[in-house]
Length: 611
Ligand code: PTT
Ligand code: SF4
Image (cartoon, helix red, strand yellow):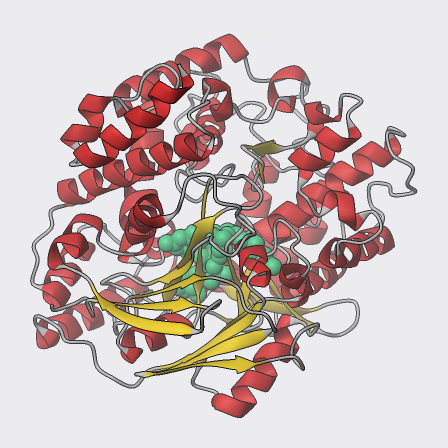
């Protein structure tokens, strides 16, 4: 096989068994890689109802035919498993030397099952695969862990590790690499911790077999050059994702005090312009010439890598208006392996519960010391952290007293940093994201606001969400490639089929990519339905209740909120366009059209049992 290695590395931790399994070209062509491979493997191999934190869950690290090659923004890796925070499909996408090294070691994915009896790490050096005891690493943070492992195995290795939060099963523990690349928001770090797996170290030295290496290198150079010539390139290099703070403030979509206000009085203290003055260096993923990780020094003089989501969720959303303080909270998350979005949402929720006297706590919005304490407690699952480390959905169910009205999540996963009190299209995007509330599949908010259709619920919103889900959630997550060149600099999608043809020899049109995206979406939805025992309801696709029930409290959009009956119609439209029934379940016809006949029969059996 060209372009793909055609080989999975399967590791059963319980029996310490390692298998190198070849897979078919047909499988590669139909599912491409990354998220495509992940959902098909989960559907075929995971027993329905498997405990996400039990030994049988599958933890997968997946590349695609794009990743690891010397072409633009190819240093990404998908991590996927059944999620412990949602009970449904979970994945994340992180940039790390681990991706290119995995490809060079000769594997397209690592599929891990079982559980170790003692903390260990996996070392992969081409054919050699070892499980090595790591008692001395257990309890260390991600920075210390990676440093020690790189000292033992070399700086050019890729290291993926969990911090204390993964070890202690914080439900939104993530996986960290290179002191600032984080992936797997829906608790992928907790799945790794449940297996007592502290880290994976990968070193590969083989060249992947390519269909046309010369053409690929030429296209790669052209792509890098083209990116560098784009209009916005220099501005992007200065602010990266942080330019979004100012944009959101101006649009009244900046999550503030647990998504109750859309503007923040201290937004200028935490925005990209303030960051620019403090940036000391930049870091990023491998194979990228538009690196976007900006490092500043925190209140302790330590380095912290900032991104929009991190700064807003640990800044305005919890009432902290000082970039250095935000950087301190961000660094704690990276070290402990906590997802910044869910951590910031959980702290904001806890602060609101405390101010409303629903819990016995002295937390308040703006409480920087309290936020640091809660982060550490969540990572230890102790004190107040034992409750809030479960995520806002589970915490609100335990607290009761109406708190679920302001728990900001979809399907259990906390929302990323866009307040949608007046953005029905973006609310639909959160509602129908395949992993819970995440912006990565369909960031339609910029289009929605700039097109002047902000208050509208018309069918064009459903079209746009689906269009973006196909591109971002389908193509980019399966290739596996960073989507920023396309979004931020207008690097055309047409480049990608060319890269794939040069790498694999297989011709894909963009339409083929969109069908692939629809296939992946249908199977992910079927997986959710299966894991929920067939008891599925369109309410699962509702955005947070606060956006309907409680109008915005501050700024020019004060008083605005979403309309539930109009949202229902928009959701209906979305289902129709996707070929899903009015509960949000793909129909038999749709499944068949997408080449999912076998899966459709399996899904029907589950649905029949519910009747
Ligand atoms: C992603 C989510 C995001 S999305 C951010 S900031 W962003 C947060 N980053 C965290 C972090 O940092 N530390 C931490 N402890 N937790 C964090 N949680 C949050 O995780 C990231 C970039 C970014 S920065 C984005 S949008 C793009 N995401 C891509 C994607 O999802 N797919 C894709 N094909 N390309 C993408 N390119 C961009 O990558 P999750 P990274 Mg991330 C410090 O993982 O689970 O998907 O959640 O990977 O290497 O850090 O790059 O404004
Ligand atoms: Fe990584 Fe940023 Fe480059 Fe994308 S643009 S590959 S997230 S450094």
